[in-house]
Length: 68
Image (cartoon, rainbow, N blue to C red; front, side, top):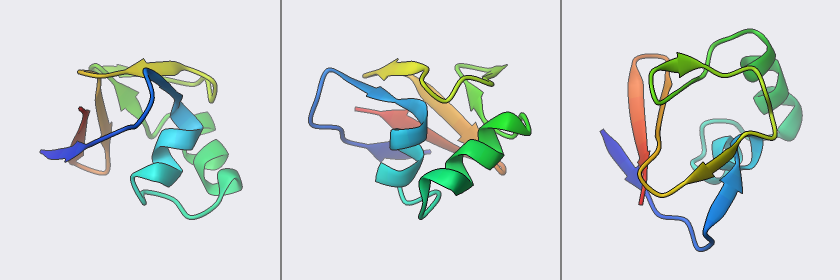
């Protein structure tokens, strides 16, 4: 599990994917989210604007990321 530190109270899912270097562009984030490839706290998330907070777990491609 990788811990990713954010500098704010919340971060949107698409922004988090770029922040964590999972994607390099917003369009890549949108594609992954719309295809159901991203899980937040164990559930597939289809909303790009999903607000994430510290402690949330994001899973993609067998890797888990924890927001700290």
